[in-house]
Image 1 (cartoon, rainbow, N blue to C red):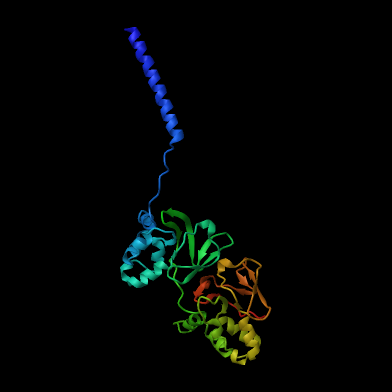
Image 2: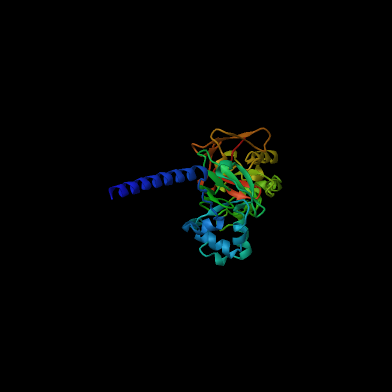
Length: 313
């Protein structure tokens, strides 16, 4: 009996040794395959409670198949709160074609990981570009308004970057926006628009996405103070060439959102070789204060920043 027990123990030991050797050999020669993530952009968004409004919008716009298709794309995905901030509480109130255009403005037709994001225009699937800015703190912004708050949600067909605002394509030029302000219930920029008209510069601040300008726009109060300082009644009393030069001094030949500005930078202007100096510490351009509530007014041909003083070259 004892001999039988010993033989069984010996056989059990040999079996265990062979099993360990077999499993060790399998782990070395046949490594277990890494799991493959088959979740598409739509799948990932559908599984994230932050994107319920976005998913509903994609469904209503008929874009589920397009954003689930094989390939490679990048989606800048607004959160539910971003839609609320844009005044959208029910996507069913938006026309399907309009909704599709808004959503496609958030999509790039190639995969762009955060490591490859850089400042400048980016073509969207809507066909119009949006504009990326890298702030001094390395924050990433779109159209001067929407901030990227999370990056690189990987999907089988691309990548998602999360943004805190819905980005909207501009539809009016700088000139058209300024004129719109003059017709508001509390008019603004009446003096700027009048001065631009007298100097025949309205056309210079009109245009589309291929034009890139930044206008530092003085308020009506800023012009009123200028008239007092010069001892004149209005822009009509300022010599035409002087008025033209002053206006050109407020225009930078580049689309510079506030996040693109750097302290102590010298910005070229349309007035000959004159430059403007950036003072981020005091939120000033030269000696004019920037209005923080009216920065990055985006136009088809550039961006407007409102200032409280007419700057003199």
